[in-house]
Length: 462
Image 1 (tube, rainbow, N blue to C red):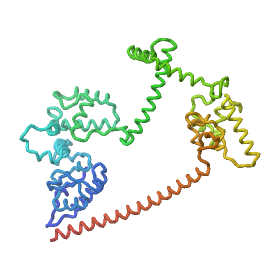
Image 2 (image 1 turned 120 degrees about the vertical axis):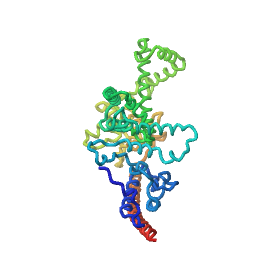
Image 3 (image 1 turned 180 degrees about the vertical axis):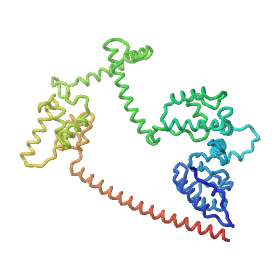
Image 4 (image 1 turned 135 degrees about the horizontal axis):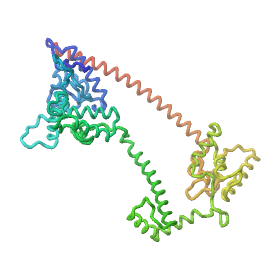
């Protein structure tokens, strides 16, 4: 049942502000502060009758309370629409024998609240502007019956209710349009107030200044991240499609079914271009290059199309959660039963075995990841052979010309982790301090409210 807000317009009794009114103002302020979309920091709109206020400017809470206690609310503001309250229907008329609800006056008030008080302060010496025309159209929809003889719904109330049903029941747009068509056929004609489809229904509701809420929509702050992710995915898929189109062109000299004739002609011109053919030839030679010299064969691996990080994850699962080191991952991808699959891998394995034997004979403790980074050859892209960009997971980098590792040592990583823990502890202390300050501010706010009411009581007694 809707709250009885008759207290809003029953402010003074025997020259003093009624206690019911003060309690109601407190409830109003508490409600308004809990509507983040209708506040300006710690300020809320003042709904008093002063011309500068009337839900047009934001004030501090204590100022709003003083204004309301001294001047009162603007007329017909039982529904706090400017402070985030959704519309609720009023009770049925007393003395009526039927259960009919009078929607008409309520929806007229809703349209007037959405338009704002400034809409009524303008003298109509000229033709109304587009905003004013939209307001009068809404006002007409809020007062016009759905069809001749309709007593339960106006055009606006019907659209509001049926759109709410659509959202609550998760009805598709096409199903909603079909339902509207059925209703239009069933009710008596003429019935221009029944829209023909979902988009016509939204068109009227958008005039309220509060468009329908979007579902399944992410935060606008994340738009850049989503856009980048989709752009990268689209670029990969575009490359895959272009390779398919080009393979069909080279091997079969025919058009791929996914291409139109015009597109195929454009791509034929591009593929026949000397610059494209030169670049394609260079890339083909690179794929067949022998990195360790003539006759050593092409570079190979056993990783397939699975990324190195995925191989590491699979190895971790097989080892009951123990993470593999860089040398183990290299042997998994570049060796079959301990035998390297290409000349480059063989050279790295020989250097690795020799270095481990040397350190073991000298009795020197060593980190296997550092040793692997030390003996591994670097690629043109400064990646570790066999691991690629996944080498950063082991805090190693390809060796430089001097053969010394340029990666971070285990000691450096440990120090960085310790520093991060200290920073985290500092943040925890700061959070605790902020919570204490928040509690202190709440106590000060309550004391300030009490002081405001004491001042109001003193003013009214005078």
